[in-house]
Image (tube, rainbow over all chains, first blue to last red):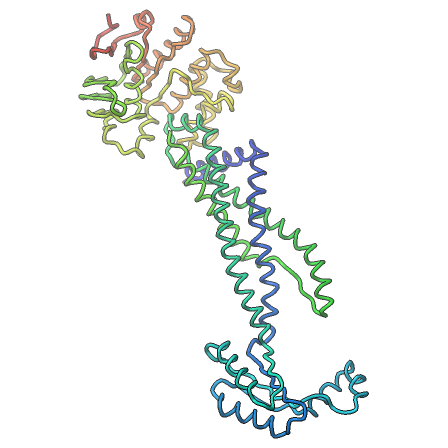
Length: 302
Length: 223
């Protein structure tokens, strides 16, 4: 066991010495990998910031049916009855908001109170508020209902309030898929960079490898320092990438804070959770070690 | 200790470098391998060291059949056979003692123990006090002795050397052969490839002569 530890300690020292002896190429490789890795980390930060927006706003479709000005009070009741009878299986709740209730609600808001007080009469129409329940194929059901309600002669407008949230959710889905593809691209870049680094190292260490074999080194002994070299490159590049992402988030957050304040809200981009970052570091290190193994096996056949 | 039976060696489709070689070397023998350049002396030594497999025939070294040995087992055989090549194959990015430490690192020996064994090996070849020199700072003869120290540090049962005196003056060549003879006297089976018949005459007990026409086994020096 002690012998095993000694051989691994030797491999680690050799790997670190090889990184140290070629500072410029080592730093250049680390920067390439780190900058590439920083992109998905930043992407994940954006997703993490955007997801609460989607989660906090209800995406259960809420449809508001505005009656025509001057429509008979019975008209909104007819719409309500039609909804309850024809769409009972998809509607969670439906209620009438009369023009008087709407005006009273607006007047309770001090921003609107003054403006409404100068109007000669109530400009608001009656409305029917329909909330759909959880159903399969929600977009199709919603579209049918909107179309059906809009065809009534007493209806002025049918407003589908949750559409923008659904669009945002769709955009986030799109970004998630994009990030997945970016991660695959990043993985390929890590593979290629480490493969080439190890190839160059193996060629420059040709004499040492030949001598080691001459004196009885096994292939594991020859390959081991290169595997550590790959793994160290992966770990160091991941840590650098996290530092780059953190540094980039500061100016982005300043700009975002100004933008969010103008909408009366607050959004902050933060790095993904520590567990997620740790998992990423381990994954990159394993990937780099795998690439190093592939490279050293191919490039030390002499 | 070493036995060749009907051994052939060729590279690709070229003619046989070695053809139908048969001999046996017992433990503790001191044997020269002679022949003109290109006759196959180096190839013969590489076969004994397990550095290359034979094309045909059986080779037994230390009771192990090299020709049937899987590639992953050969490194363990190499640890029992000290190899010195004509070009000393030293590593010039490290000191003399670090060169000698490499075989001990390969077997995973504890560092303190390894350093004392490396110092002892350097002392045996007359390089005491030169542990921290870079091989570049050494003469040709010293470099060759450093290669010998690296080959013997793992206490091999067999020592093989390919033209170890080829680029050395007479005096340096004698010192190198004296070192080999000293190891042989303590029981290390020694094989040296050389084409220097006058030096062989001074040291050889037995000579394996490889020629274009065949293979001869002489007691003493080949005529």
